[in-house]
Length: 238
Image (cartoon, rainbow, N blue to C red; front, side, top):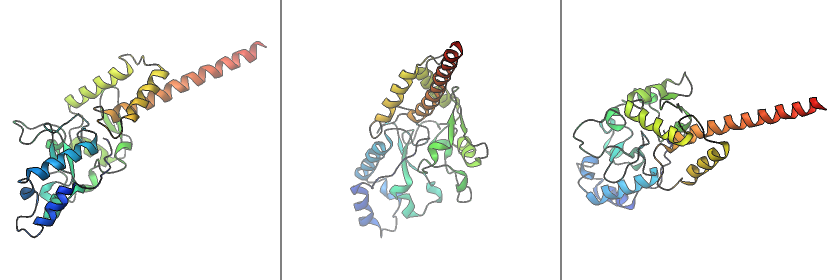
């Protein structure tokens, strides 16, 4: 999961709230009727998230996402339903023909107020440091005792076969099927991912960053170990 750092809300939303805050129907259902505000919201959310789904990391655009309430709308006050700090953009588009078994639709109305400590939100600064991605595409909690991370993986269906397959394909495409990437190549690829920050991001970029960082560390250790052994060998020959 990639940490999403919220920016200032769009002017259109601020003006809408000021106009309707005394309306008896004030809330998200009323907001949805204003296409201008909804469009402005989606555009800013996509830019803020680098055009990645907030929960899964798959690529999204204006036609492939919906506005998702991080604190489920069912458990929100009217003010919370139209709070910019409580919305993100997620796959799929509104009103899909069938339920998506991962991400926002799988999350549904979870968590309740009582379960909220078990949810690792993408708005949580620690979210990027609590999940580990394996070469198989599987995601796990980095800390085995992090029950919230494990529960979030389960509740959001983050190990669904589609997501695992997509992550595995991206990892293999980056490292090579047999981990043939060189240290120089790994560093260059990692640098390119970091340069993308603030622009349209590569799907699952946070996954690739993590596996590349591990690969760079491993290759550097191998290089340093070889250099150390060669140095010992030369000294013994003298």
